[in-house]
Length: 162
Length: 162
Image (cartoon, rainbow over all chains, first blue to last red):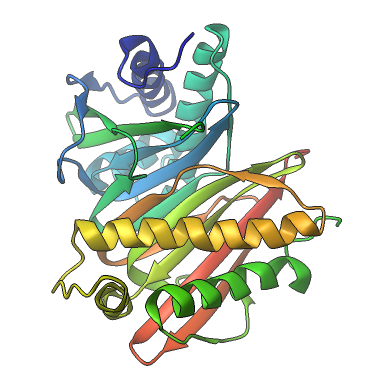
């Protein structure tokens, strides 16, 4: 597959993986809104998992941002715990979700001939923070709604060839 | 070089690179405190650059976290601009610093036979946020002081062999 970060065949594996992981792990049904090119601060959240990706021809980053209520509800449903705020267990869960979403998309893209390796996830905790990916390429934002609030998957890839 | 994330020969390239980049780019002199293994939320900041790293045997992540006043002073010194808050230019600068610090450490480590590739930087903006690296390995925190406030470099590497 030739690399084009705007193409649906590149975006959909991340979108589908996020929906599957949240449904499978936390029984939270997400409604995907239309993916958009990120402009300004359309996506804020309270806890975010970030992962770097390196392939033969491209490098990039992916993030999963949750509003606090969605993350806390997912925690309750996955582990039966009801933390009142984003504690270490929620941070671990968000790291795990970040790994799973990226891993799922990686498998689907690998079947199409697009290969990359994943770094380790990094998790950000902070009220209403905002993520910016790279500076050289467009960032695609996939907004999701749930009955507990919003979450966002964002991807940014740039060609290694500069 | 055999991989041991706790070893000084692994930590020092990041520590030295951070000091050099901040002195060279922003004429801000940093005083390095003793690197420590991260426990709880010792390092909070207002703007952070994060980058993933993937090598033959290891994967990991690195972050550079600034208190707002240090980032704003660096902006003033590097570009002559005096933003009152962390705007897009400051975010770009932090992304660039993240690339340069990691790139400098990568070069020094490469000479010692430790190779990795860098993903693209991701930048977090948010008052007093807190970063957690991975979940499987220790995170080394390198705290720095300056006359304008604190900043922190953090690295976490885990073996691919699980």
